[in-house]
Length: 210
Image (tube, rainbow, N blue to C red; front, side, top):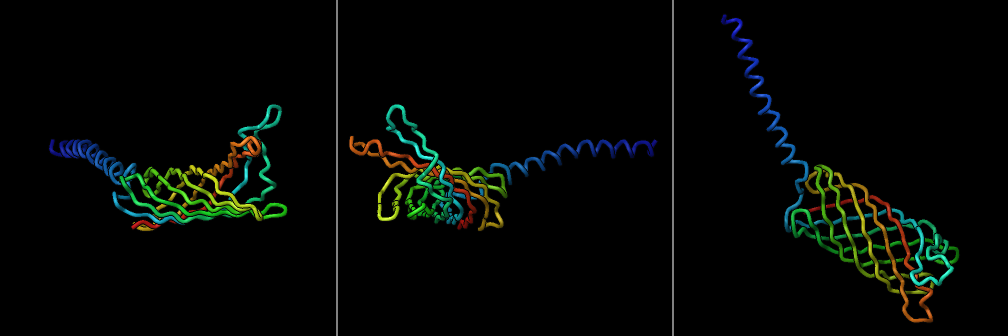
């Protein structure tokens, strides 16, 4: 009778302990990894981005009737290079506010196009530790030159990244941004020259938080 009782007791113990262990493991994963912020309010972040920028098309918001509002050619601009420096601080565990200085240059048949945007940035970090996915929006002004021609335009850059935390301070990954560069004229003389340029930036990122 005692020999039969031992396996019965062992089986009962396994059945009892296993759900508790599974529940504890599930809670640990949920608490420590999925959705938990790697940052805290007041923590600061410095980001470096570098990559390529692809000219897509322009939109003519005041195109006359019978003409196409979308032009697939941005002045025969080639694929260019871009980079940026970004600094911000977390005002909430997952929300970062800051500023960014970026720049790009690309060749055209006879001249070089350069743009230097200075923008305010807001980013929300989705956490899947050790992976983090920041979704951000930059709004500011861009200083543009094309040969001897200079202009200042608004700039809007929504984007998304995917970063892998190497340790408690450093993360590396990929970054994608969509550049809207509107150059709008409201006078009747130049109204038909208004354009909204569209670019796509793809690059790599390094992030240091402290």
